[in-house]
Image (tube, rainbow, N blue to C red):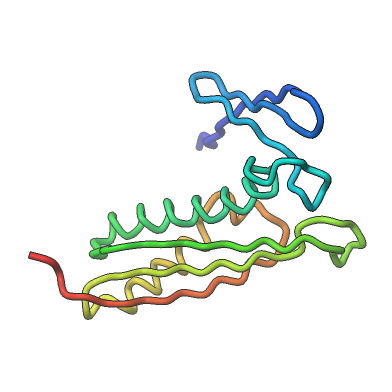
Length: 149
């Protein structure tokens, strides 16, 4: 049996201060800076910490959408919000200590339990979330509305 393996090369170059430019071949460059909490001077620029939480929440949303599509869940809307907490961890190091995620799903009546089940499955299979060594507390809210004609 052949094991799948993928590579995601990224390069980062210092622009000055706490600003860097991140490059991936064939994609738009992204300027990144430290957040104001860590001496960053531009609160409007995405930070590595922002991307960390965004990577987790967007991966969960994309994974959930993919499973929902394969399982036939009528997904009317999906919103995933995340909040990462940084502080002193149990191992004494300063870093992300936990993440709280809220998954909001809107589906047709009668599909509520399927939506919850797919959300749990997405949590277990989201590549980014399963790669993290921190607790992720996920809450799921399911709303229903009749299918639009």
